[in-house]
Length: 406
Ligand SMILES: [Zn+2]
Ligand SMILES: [Zn+2]
Image (cartoon, rainbow, N blue to C red; front, side, top):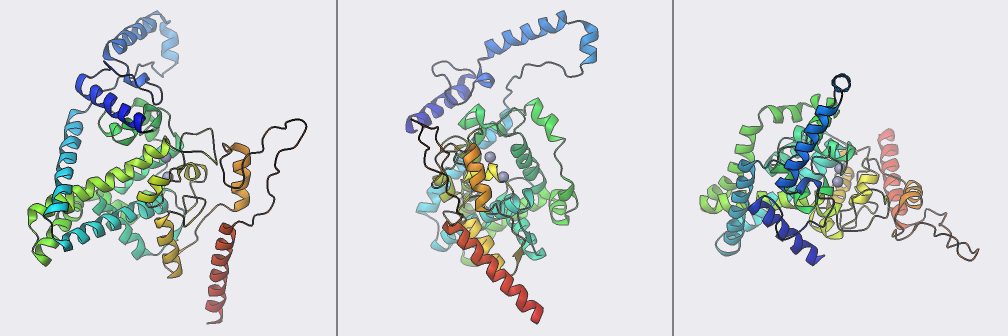
């Protein structure tokens, strides 16, 4: 895996420098989108020739025009991201060498809270509707998501719903079959694939259009971003404990913003490439423990793509899954309710039908050898997770009974 990463970095560097592969070939996924410009030119010519040969009436009948996708780099974004990353690295240097202790704690607090707002708010609440919550929790999550600076909720949700609907195809905004770099950040540096634009128009967004918080944020996003994502994190340390604005800008704004962004992007890249697939073997998303550790529990991605409506985004709710812990805590406080989750029976059924055989308990039955039946799939649902869920539902039932009495 280490060599793969080095390889990816090398190929990416040469792609950016020369616009085509000179020394290294891509290994991850197919490389149709990364062919050299000469080859693309030749293909384009051939396609145009073919089109001329096709009967005119026939081409009028079929409105879908044939195209050869040509990767077009958007240099403004590319240079922009490069500058942002250089600034963030300088921010990390300042964070370690010259910022005050309170500023360090403040940066971690802002990073953590905004990251939770993305995983719990934008992802599990808004995109997948996995639980319900009261209005102030919703407002708080929209506030935090704005601080995270990952574009407005509307665009975030549309892209993510499209990602689930067309995972790892040309219509997926961050199609992981185009390799690590593309699915991580490259997708923001090139023109969208025509299929992404075409299919993006059909994503159902009616629930978001009826949500006053999300629509308010969409309407005033630029000004909200400037105030909440940029100025607020740098001004608070300046006013309250006399940190310099220079440190505030590079540490609390740039370094913090880019760190959270990269962690989020790892879910699109690493969690689609490196890991196992216990639940659904015929898709790209995988279970990645490292992404889960640093990504607040969003790395159990094979499970998440198998059961996107499960509020835990993982089979084992509290194992490297901080977001689930927070949602559970909010439920204990009575702020969150109606959580949806897959039962162990549903998980077992999926694992035995479509898993890759690496599930810790319900591995796929092997083919019979010498007439002998392989280990039978357990029929009980008695693993710890079930107790955990039962315990929780018992508490909820108790509460409901109490409320009725009262
Ligand atoms: Zn995914
Ligand atoms: Zn999702």
